[in-house]
Length: 148
Image (cartoon, rainbow, N blue to C red; front, side, top):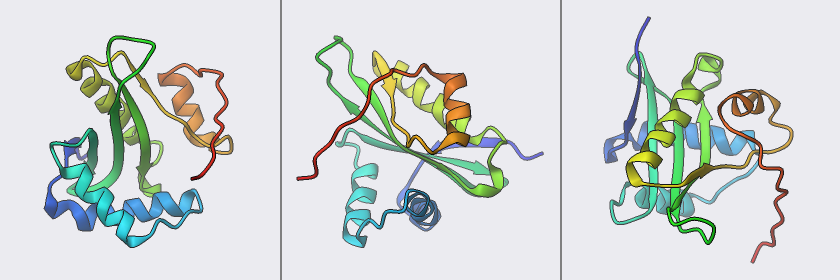
């Protein structure tokens, strides 16, 4: 069995990241403009940004992604890491890829001195929630938003 590798990304990973990013958008039934996608890609690779990307690789193939963002909090001295996007190729679901990506974010949070990792998911994402209930606690908060 091939080892699962969680690693950072480089410019040459764009062609591996993009299909997963499109798969994530399809899952959530959104269509992010190409210009925004390119802008996001560049921010994810810019070391001056607080946005980060890790990829999961299995058997030499990139099969998962996680985007996470550092931000300040009024509730703690330490920053938070917001796990904004997590996606794995459908063919590897149930094989620990999502868990490994989350644990990578936990490790990065500890390295950065963060106080918390948090994320949202859609209430219909039952398969992912089975994993999330094992690796974190539900906060009970309900999200409200207004698009500007």
